[in-house]
Amino acid sequence: MRSDFILNDSITYMNHAAVSPWPLQTVEAVKAFADENAVYGAANYLRWMQVESELRQRLARLINAPTVDDISILKSTSEALSVVAYGLDWQAGDNVVIFRQEFPSNRLVWESLKGRGVETRLVDLWSGENPEQRLLDACDERTRVVSVSSVQYATGFKTDLVTLGRFCRRERILFCVDAIQSLGAIPFDVQQVQADFVMADGHKWMLGPEGTALFYSRSEIRDRLNLNQFGWHMVQHRGDFERESWQPSDTGTRFECGSPNMLGVHALNASLALIEQMGIHQIHKGIIENTTYLMKLVEQHGNSLSLISARESERQSGIVTFKVNGANQQDVYHRLIGKGVICAVRGGGIRYSPHFYTSREMIEKAIESVMMN
Image (cartoon, rainbow, N blue to C red):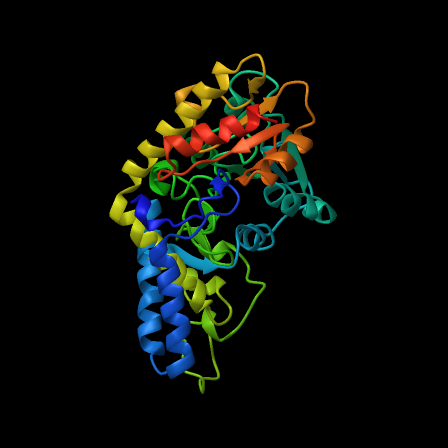
């Protein structure tokens, strides 16, 4: 599958946890869509709608959703989180429980509810053993939502979602999962996890574009979310423009108020087709082999580098974060970028995130570039 990726030879790409390069077939799908639009306009719009339907089905399969009706195609993880946060009927004194180390999108949206009397309880991920249990210990009879990332963006720490989901379902607490750092990299089963809401942009491990995102809402609680956006696309009789009476769709399309991002739909559909062709379990195997090898190389340079990411197999993901001892990490980052090593500064260190197609030679070069700083 490496032939599907045509990165320039000057680039050592270690940044899939931020924005992934597109595979060749996604590039070709976007070019074909643009050419078609230029020559024929919207003459083939019915076929475009079929591509949109294909994408919904692929997204449903990716998370093992009970039905494709549970899938919404939104703009971003942040939008989906806002749909949940501002769709619920809150009462003063309610609370939300999250990890302190969450990405801002999964913190700011809950903290913004302070004016409604909603408390955001921040649990330190690193304050002791068994962070999931500490998260659950922070819940009480006024906890309405537990919201976590499946994989923490800064260090790649993989959360035990099954334990959290089981507790939330039993205690009738809504369980919200930001899965942006796992979908496309790690098998995900929304029914096993028992999540009520799942959201993820397509531009990281799913190898798609920015501006196109998955939002899953469990059918039994979907209509508990009040709607704050309205338009022609979110109604039951979509396309019947002369109808005066209307009701929101019973499906996930109720959260899609306006025209779809057809360019993004074509791109993400092509990327997920590649993921299905490869198989998510095979992709996960390749990613873990790469991150395990990367951790090994970091530990071989123990005098110069310190591993920040968790080493335990059950906590591994596609992210490896390490610290360059005695150095300013921002300075290290800028030097790496200058050498064509595309990475990020997160969690107090340098974050590398190879995908399944990343070669051992590229991983070795990425570490060599650090040691040459």
